[in-house]
Image 1 (cartoon, rainbow, N blue to C red):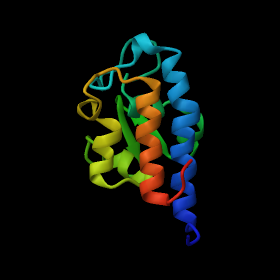
Image 2 (tube, one colour):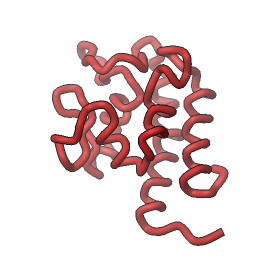
Image 3 (cartoon, helix red, strand yellow):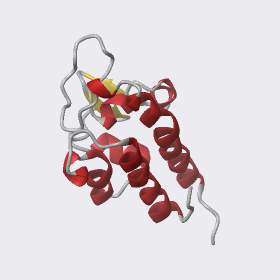
Image 4 (spheres, rainbow, N blue to C red):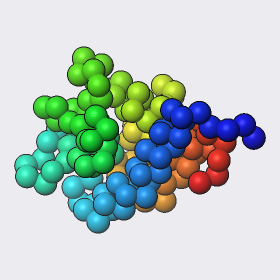
Length: 132
């Protein structure tokens, strides 16, 4: 297996943080989690979907991924809503964005922790050739 490039290492670390830190945080507040909702929900500190929760992660914020007016933004606030920021920040292909951030991929607006972790691990294997 060839060595990962520096950008791949960064993407891999971000995906692992999404899986190991953000997903468990979401599950501890499951009643506020909703994969099809971008809208800001009161003072709970989330836009409700996986990308929204990631947008409140301090480490991701320091790396430039954040929410602006309730939508994920990375580097260029003019990237299209609907995946642009997530694709660039996590190093995804367009179809992978759908597999990870769209409720359609899970068949539910409230996927389980197991489903979210499996989707992230699948992308890690596909993009980076590592199992975890």
